[in-house]
Image 1 (tube, rainbow, N blue to C red):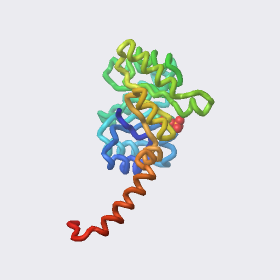
Image 2 (cartoon, helix red, strand yellow; image 1 turned 30 degrees about the horizontal axis):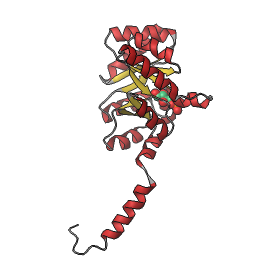
Image 3 (tube, helix red, strand yellow; image 1 turned 90 degrees about the horizontal axis):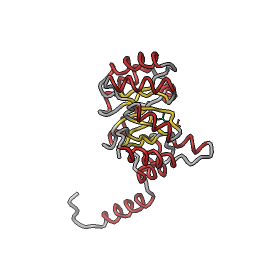
Image 4 (cartoon, rainbow, N blue to C red; image 1 turned 135 degrees about the vertical axis):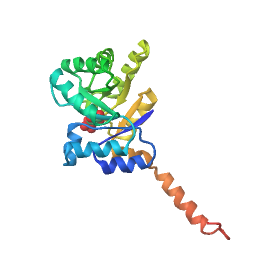
Length: 217
Ligand code: E4P
């Protein structure tokens, strides 16, 4: 499973990347706005830190506008993946970008049928938003199951990018089902690293090590 970090905060990206486990980055307009920094500045830094797919989102709602923005974003760096919302105009834009050889990530996805259509349009990634489905009383994880089954039935190469993940259990379940990628917020990623028994065990080992005579280090 590939692990992407879901943030536009370059310090978080830098710290996570130092762990050696980050394959890519996803951003969205809300995450960029949260940084309070200029889009161009943030993106230029991100592409220097992580050598992997970097999803940047278009903000037009018509295919023509999306394509114009997509071409501008694709110019920034070869690793840029164009994030397009799952609407009719978005599908048209995805088909054109796919035919041009530009990678896409179809976002704001909330059903398996939406994922089927995005795969038909040639999307490189689909981003089902699990947490937001949970927020409205659905079981978000179910659509990962459904999309996995549909893509496997027909051999669609589109990657399932589990998104809107809020905690480590989301990541574990998405991995068990077979999502290709999980995009994880920094806080949840750090929660995945930790276990209280690891901390207690390490403290005991270090305390006991002090009792060992003639230590080499
Ligand atoms: C990533 O691609 C999405 O934009 C992000 O995971 C959305 O997460 P949220 O629902 O927590 O805002």
